[in-house]
Length: 325
Image 1: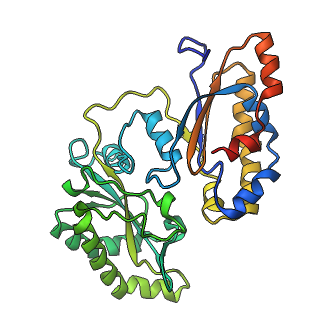
Image 2 (image 1 turned 180 degrees about the vertical axis):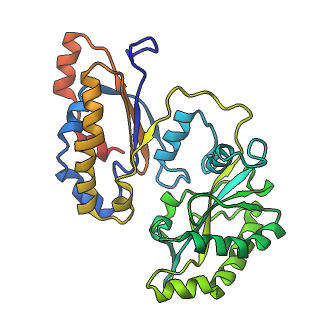
Image 3 (image 1 turned 135 degrees about the vertical axis):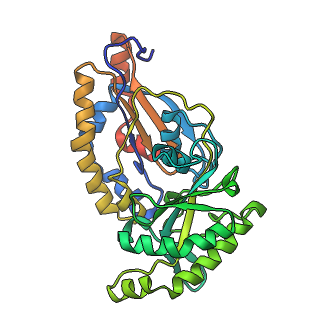
């Protein structure tokens, strides 16, 4: 039986994206992980629910887990992150319009395929973002899309009816992969595909990219649209927003098995150890482990003496838990 709302402490949920990875190097590193804090913590918890889809879903497990924790319900590829960010920034139309995230990025063009690079590694400066936003805004406005700057360079909010009901892939799904399966190809996305072509031509000629190339940086040659949709008319209240620990992300997306293992060890010695300490103090804690296909939410359970002894002998070790994600 899970702890009820009447217990002494509220849950302190922690979401861990990329806790497991299907790529070659990370899968090879998985059996070598030594995670004693996670092992001890999982012995005190049990799986409360599991969200299993396939690795072709547009919304990755960690985004689906965060959406559930915030009370957002939407279809695959329609988690309204842009609308939520617009609401928090108090932008016009945040509460009743459809929004999307426009992220400047680099498409690596190969002999037979185009691959999306990680936008987080682009090192876009505020002045570059402002210059490109001013150049891009007229093109977007021609299609009825209003653009808004954010505090994050290269990351814009876009408001348009085009984004209502349009499914788009999270960058975390598409990074490092051929883009054909991740780009929206529906009839509703046709104006966006044309806009993307126009922007690629514009970015090819901009002085910003000349200066970036001179500094040895990748050119900004496209944008990625994600987080599309609108907020529900009434957002449910959440007592405590989860913490999302992104420390495994970079190594996982680069499929750097050694760096991913080191990041896991640091996570185990830091936030996981803190969560274990809270649990040992009798606090109700929550942990969601997310891989490429599955998210598992772990929470405390009350067990009798016999059940507790049996669970210690039968419990899965961290490596097998993570491998199932």
